[in-house]
Amino acid sequence: MTSTLPTLRQTDGTLRPQSPEQPTKHHTPKRRRYADRILEGLTRGSAITIITVVIAIGAFLLWRAIPAISNHPGGLLGFLTYAGNWNVATTSAMLFGIPNLLATTVLISALALMVAMPVALGVSIFLNFYSPRMLRTPLGFLVDMVAAVPSIVFGLWGWQVLGPALSGVYEWLARVTNGFFLFHVYPNSPAFATGRNILTGAVVLSVMILPVIAATTREVLAAVPRSHVEAALALGATKAEMIRMAVLPFGRNGFIAASMLGLGRALGETMAIYLIVSPSSQFRFSFFDGGTTFATAIANAAPEFNDDLRAGAYIAAGLVLFIVTFVVNSLARLIAQKSSR
Image (tube, rainbow, N blue to C red; front, side, top):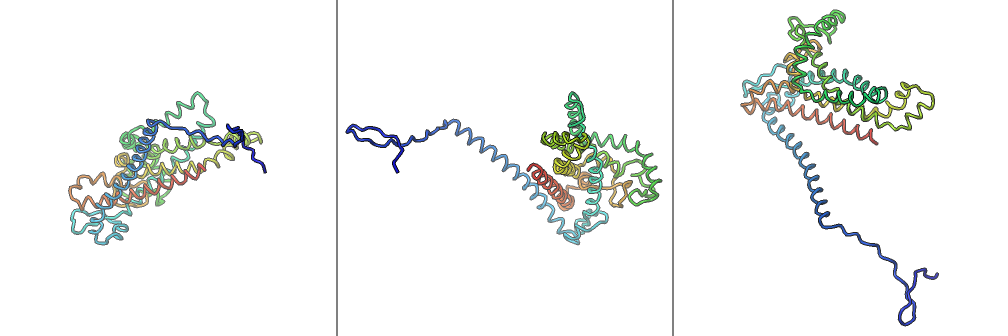
């Protein structure tokens, strides 16, 4: 087989094959290389800083919580199961536990999520598919602005306005449900008489997490492929049927992830719940009763933090809240990644 390389005639008249052209080397200026290295270092440093801060917070909580838990008569098991009144006045025999705090926190957050999820989904569908184009941006901006309202303002509104306004509704619910345990009214309950109960706290908290869920859900629904929408409409589907068959299945995981992010926001809310829900050391499974969450327990006990062991008892509760919130947000991230594939 003959060679196909081009040839050149040498001085002696013979032919020599021409070597193939070498690829041109592109040289990046030193200034650009240094800029790339600096940017890479800054971004890597930022990522490491965030990870370090999270690990440092967890380590601090664990370091401060271990002595208090070790001082508990029941140890770690007692901390996880003791449901009586907290007594940390005597550091030699402290009694404290998380069941009541965990139950109240989960109940208020779950109720808030049940109220906020359908409203946020409805708002997102309206803004993406029904709202006039000229109103879409301002309405979306108003929804997002709810997230900018300070939580203490929500707390004052729920305490002074919403709670008293819902007292009549609560009385009607108590009569209709006829003593059902979720709507049971305990005698001389200030939480029911003033409206400062778990249900009021959940309603206010649902308003607070609504923009978190709606903003993410709106972006997810806006990412539905146009071909899916047009195909459903071309087959004769109405707009409502198109949303049900093409939009909601595509955005389901994203909506769940957005709801989990809202739940993570609700679990750690402090000031609004502190002002709205009447404190109670017991959890009695009634929406009309008061209660204490992890966050409000820590805020209420701040004056006791002058003693390491007393502070450690509440820091141990904060450690549990940190773990629960971290798990919830991690699940939300995993669901969101699954949705984007």
